[in-house]
Length: 401
Image: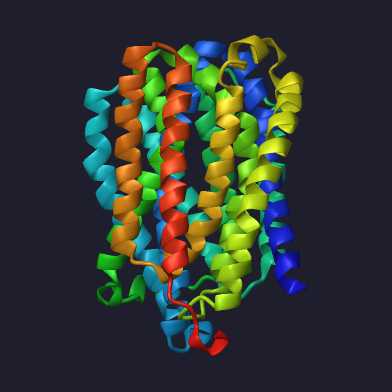
């Protein structure tokens, strides 16, 4: 079955990169930088991920959501070039506005510049690949990510001793991959320059950006809150406790991406698909909970054995949270396609606000990272209950009735 094959290819292509970063490179960085400096790197890299995921995912999701409305797109790629040009425009505006963070945070001007450059070239790489997604050419995506993973893995043999060196290395690699994609995809730079920006759906993108930013910030907000309330060293502890679950989350992210690719050309969800998903979700929750708990402990024992005692009080909590996040990722693709972007953005933003408030309250009642873990579990349980309810209410294709 091609759908299953594409899911497997997509999972493998992304997992290679994640394994290289999280299992090969990051443990090495922790040893070379030390707990405090590594916590600072994780914090900065979280900022990078928030913005690159928000920018790239918002554009790719909107492109796939509207793909069935584009005329002659496979021939002239008008919308594709238009969207790519808008990425540059949005990034320019955002980078100018956020430059004020240099004055109000510990981030230096050099670090900010490096993050900004890395964000735009990584977002460029991620959006350019959407052309292969809408055509379901997941083998090409696999090949590109194989090269990407190989280049990142080569950093293991370098003597990296600072956060500055890490980001410089990442920028060089992403620049090389962009050149490769330009060549493979036969990108016409003249058409990008000539693309008419007036035909772009700015209103829809803004709500996707709000939703994406809230969801991305939710994934990394624990780092910022812990850094603010408990210090950078606690960021490292919480990162290691949640590392196995975040590693295992990527297959579900990739599954969501493939699902969105397959439903890009439809108007309504089918009744049969809705029923299958509702029956499957409880089994996914149970299986993921068991596998992630025991598999995660095994991963931590191998990569960070000296942190086992520090994470034992929160590990079972973050495992349950992860199971709910997996459900959230699966349902998300259907809501992006068939549900109101405005209402989804409100839900994501409200989730983030509630998490921040609960984290502060729980930390005040009992200082420690367990307070953040409980707040995160509470919020995702609430969010998934609402999303499942919304999913049940989605209109289905009457032909299936």
